[in-house]
Image (cartoon, rainbow, N blue to C red; front, side):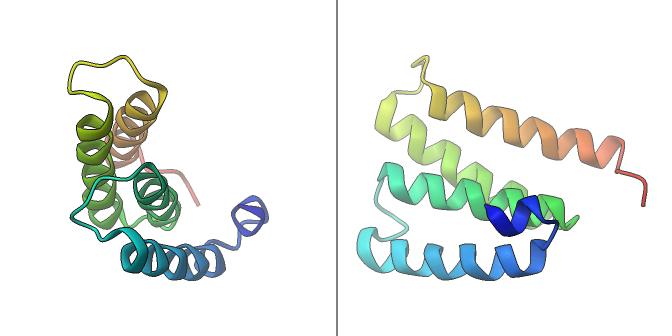
Length: 100
């Protein structure tokens, strides 16, 4: 998160990807665990910050699926709301990319 705050998105992405690998080894990508969903979200946010929207949407979709499996499809839960918000941010980025 610190590297993201400094605008060092490539370094942040590298660390998030390592974390995601560890989470995958521990929990498996095909199981539902809140730590795994959180790691997917964090990695996706880095991808979005780098303009890699397809990668971001893929990971955020997986996180949303996990969160819905964990908390219920129709549940009002902050982790589900965060996933939906981040997916919306990706679509907003597609429609109006930040100016460099």
